[in-house]
Amino acid sequence: MTNDYREDRRVRKTRQAILQAFLSLTKELGLHAVTVGGITKRADINRATFYAHYRDKQDLIDQAISGVLSEWGTAEEERWAGSGNEVDFDRLLPIFVHMFEKIGEHAEFYRIMLGPGGYPRFAENLREVMCRLIKQGHNRVLELKGARPLVEPDIYHSYVTSAQLGVITYWLQQDRPHPPEYMAEQLMLMYRLGAVKAADYEG
Image (cartoon, rainbow, N blue to C red):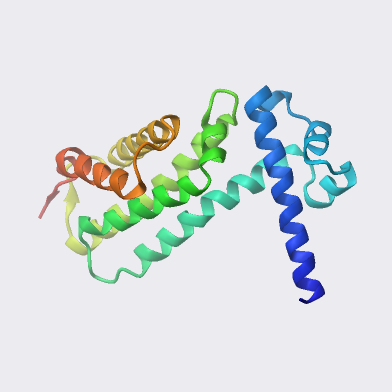
């Protein structure tokens, strides 16, 4: 085992301990009451160790949010970009499955940050990622079909993004009662019965 590997592993372990301490304190006290001192005490590290990884509490929040959102957001952007000339709403199913899988992997983080004592900006950060993906797919359909939407795109994007965020929030609040595949299928069904019809195209 190389020194670099041991160092990377140690860094990951320390950052994970800091994040878990932050989340547990946020759940107990609410975000505004969490301090760097409280985090270091809960994580059993000194303040110098914390500041070796983060500038302050806000930097910890920003890096954590960037990490969990980029895991699936970047992958789905690449998937749409590599879809070529194939456009089919059935392509949404694996995208939704992957979305629920990735959110499920960090369910505690999402639940706490979206909760009443969490970070108010997180819902907006999540909404921005989802809206960007929806716009990317929607615009590609319009481009390839050479069509114009029946519903104003910005209104449609806002509607679909809010609906997806509502479904995700429900799933987390209920402690994920259904697997990602089931949730993805339910979301697809709602698309087909509602949003997809609203997004129909005129040739």
